[in-house]
Length: 127
Image (cartoon, rainbow, N blue to C red; front, side, top):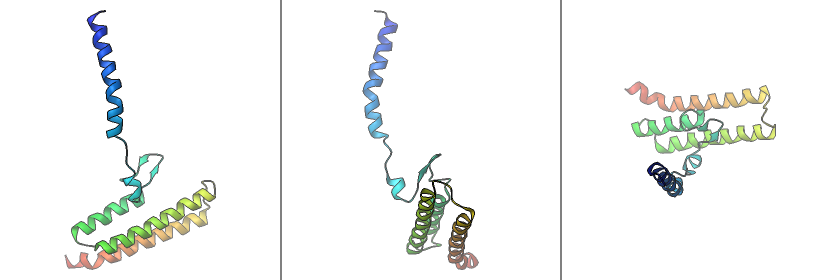
């Protein structure tokens, strides 16, 4: 047996032994989904998804002291409820939501954003 084939065999054996260990340590947790983030076509949406980003921004405002944790939790709960209703509407309509329903969800999301802005407005004027 040549040295090259022995090295190759050793490398393969090492990888075969290491893969299960790496798979156990790199297994994704469901903590992202429990935090209200969803998993969709483009992977985990902690950064780009509208509601996931909203939660991140709310957490940032709490850390800055511009919102209380109770306010942020209330807004997050409302956002999660709206998101779940949107998902349910899509599921019941085989993925196609009519324009009227879509406009209704858009208005509700806009109203939520306005409520958040209103909660932040008094602290913005004081700065």
